[in-house]
Amino acid sequence: MPGNRFKSIVRDIKCLKIQGASQVRKWAMKALRWSVRDSRARSLEAFRRELKGNAVTLLRTRPTEPELRTSLRIFLQQANTGSPTVPALKRLLLKALDGYEGERVQALKDVAENGLKVFFDNAVVFTHCHSHTVEAVLLKAWKAGKLKRVYCTETRPLFQGRITAANLAKHGVPVTLMVDGAAATYMKEADFFLSGADAVLEDGSVVNKVGTKALSLIAAREGKPHFVACSTKKFDPITYFGVEEKIEMRNPREVWPDKPGRVQVLNPAFDLTEARYVKGILTEKGVLKPELFALHMIKELELDKNKREWFSLIRLMK
Image (cartoon, rainbow, N blue to C red; front, side, top):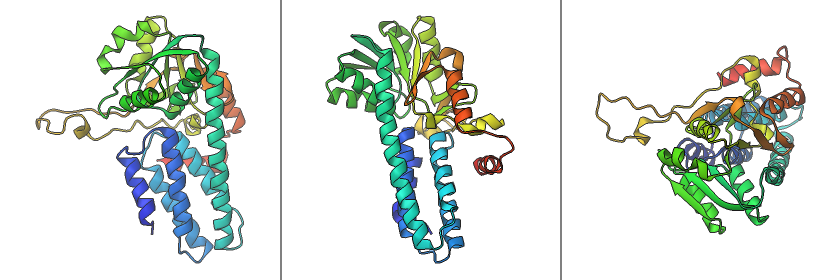
C-alpha cells in the first residue's frame, strides 16, 4: 500500500498545489522514491506489481503530461530489469531516480542558455500562465542584459500568472500583470510571445495552458513570433501511434463555485496550438522548428509501431 508521503504528493498534484510539467515530474519522481523506500514487499513480483500500481496512480493525476509519462515509462523499464533480490532492485531504482533528476536539471540550464538565441537587447516579452522553463529562460535573459520587460496574463481561473509575475519581480525584472482579456490590446507592445508546453505532438503542435492558442493567434495578427520553451521530454510519443492527447477538464467550481444549477461551465486545463503558429521551440538541443522537433524525437526514440513496449504504453495510457 502507498505510504502517507506518496499519497500527499498525489493529492498536491491533483489539486495543483504542485503545478507546471517539470515540477509535476520532479515531485512524481520523489513520490516514487518514497514508494521504493517504504515498500515492504518481500518478493520481486509483489514489489514490481506495487510499483506499477503506484506509477499508474501518478499517471492519472494529470492526463496531459507527457513528461510525466516519459519519466514513469523509464522508471518501469528500470523496475523490470533482472535484479536478483528486492533490496538490489531498490538500490538500482534509487540510483536511477537520482541520475534522471540530475539530467533534467542540466536540461533546464541548457534550454535557458539556448533561449538566449531568440533575444536581442532590451527585448519585451509576453507570456502566459506559469512555466518553470519559461521562467528560467526569462531570468537567463535578464541576467544577460537582454530583457527589458515582461507582460503576463493573470491566467484564470487559478491565476498561475501571478506566480510568474511574483517570481520575476523578486529578481528585479520589470513585469506587468494583466487580466486575460487585455492581451489583445497589449500584445503589440511585446517583441514576441513566449509560452511553455505541456506536450508537443507528432506533427509539432503544442498543447499548453488554455488560452495559449488565443494568444498565439493574437501574436500572429500583430506580427509577433510565438516561441515555445520546453525540454525534448515534452514530446508525446503516443501521438505517433494515433492516440489523441487528452485535454484535462478541471472542476467547474474552480470557475464559479456557486453557479446556478442550469448553467454549464467548461473548464479545460489546456488547448492545442497548431505548429504553423509556432516559430521555434527552445530546447536543450537548440532552437528547433516544431516539425523538425517532432521528426528529431521520432528518430531519437526509434519509434516503431510494431514494438510491443509502445503498445503496452498506449494501453496503460487509456
